[in-house]
Image 1 (cartoon, rainbow, N blue to C red):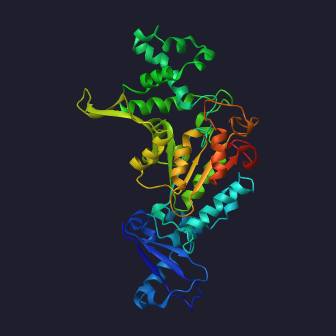
Image 2: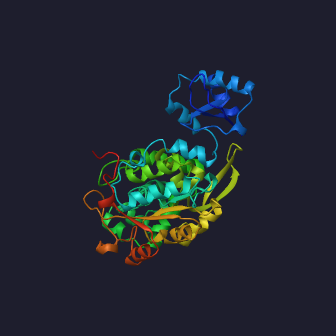
Image 3: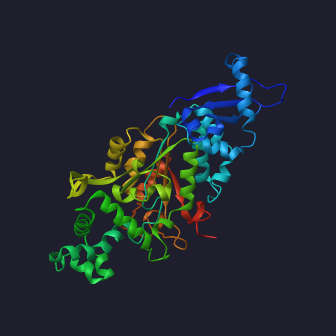
Amino acid sequence: MPVRFLHTSRLRHANEPGRLLLETPDVARRDRAMTGRLVIEVADREAPEATCPSEHVQEADMRRTRSLNGIDRRRVLSSLALLPVLPGTLVAAAAQTRAPGDLLPSWSDGPAKQAIVDFVRATTEPSSPTYVAPGDRIAVFDQDGTLWVEQPMYAQVAYCLERVPALVARKPELRNVEPFKTVLSGNREAMAKLPLRDIEKILAATLTGMTVEEFQSEVSRWLETARHPRWNRPYTELTFQPMQEVLQYLQSNAFKTYIVTGGGQDFVRVYAAKTYGIPPEQVVGTAGTTKFGYGRNGQPLLTKEPKLLLNDDKGGKVEGIHLMIGRRPVAAFGNSVGDREMLEYTRAGQGAPLAMLVLHDDAAREYAYGPAAGLPDSKIGTFTPALYDEARKRDWTVISMKNDWKRIFAFEA
C-alpha cells in the first residue's frame, strides 16, 4: 500500500507547529472525512527546506489540516496503527507518547523492568548504534509458564483428559484399554502418575481424526466452560499481567510478537488473538500433519492426522522459528529448559538482543518451582540450576515473580 510523506513548512501566519502528513488510499476509503491523510503533530521540528511542498500543495494541506481540528490525539494515533509498518522515526515517536512506567505498571522498578525499557530504547531510536528496522523487530514468547499458568498441568493436557469420555463414547473399544481406562476412573492421583508415552497416546487420540474446524470448535467450547482447579477461573484469565504489558509495549513500538510454544499450534491459535493480541499466523507450536480431502457434501477440508510434523520444544523451537518466521528474533522470553535453545539463538544475533526467563518463586500468589534457586523440583516447566547459571553467565535477565511483579493477574486488586 503506497504511503506518501509530506512535511509542511511552519504556518507562520497561523502560528501552527510543523506537521507530518501521511497519505494512504486505504485510510481515505476507511474514513472519507480524513481524505486519506493522517496528521501527526511534530513539536518544535523545523521542516527541511528541500522537503517543503509547493505553495499549491501547502494550501491544500492547510485546508485538510483545519478539517482535523476536532480529532483528538488518541484517535490520530490509533488510526496510525492501521497503517503498514512505517519508518522507525515516526513509529518510535508515536509509540513513545506514553512513558515506559505507564506501559509497565505491574512491574516493580528494578533490573528486569529496566532491561526491557533499555532494550526498546536501544532498538527503536534511529540514532542508536543497535537500532533495529521495524521489519526486523521480532520478539518470541514461550506460552506455558511464560505468558500464563502452567501448573498443576498444562491446559492442553487438561483439555485432552476431559475429552477422553467423548472419545470413548465414539470408540467403545477403548473403554478397557490403558491409559484411557485410568482416565475414565477419575482417579487424579493415578492420572498424575501416567508415564509420558501414555500421555502421548491420549494426546494423539483426542487431538486428531477430525477436521480443523471441528477441532477449533471443540477447543472454543472447552475454554468457555473449563476452570482452573485453584482459582476457579477460565484459563484465559490466568495470563500474567506483567507479560501482557510487555507484549503491548513491544507491539506499540512496531515489534511483531510471536508465540513459540511446545504446546499444540492449532490449540493455541484458537485463543491467541483474543487473549494476547497475537493472530493465528504468529503462533508457532508443536504441529501434526493434516490431510486434504472432501467432505460428504463435496466441500474441501483438512483433517488432523496422528503424525508429528514439528516438535516445537528445545532445539525444535529454533527450527520452528526458521520454518515459520524466517527471521532471527531480537528478543526472546521463556521460563524453562525447553526454551534454552531459543534464547541462545536469539542472543547469538547482532546488536543487543534481549533474553529473559521467568522464575516461578511466588507460591503465595502463583506457584514456586525450579529446582533453580533452591525451589522445589517440577516435571512441568523445569528451571534447572544449570539453566540459571547459564542465564547469569550469558547475561540473560531472570525475572523473579515475587520481586519483579507487583501483581500477577489482571483480576488482582
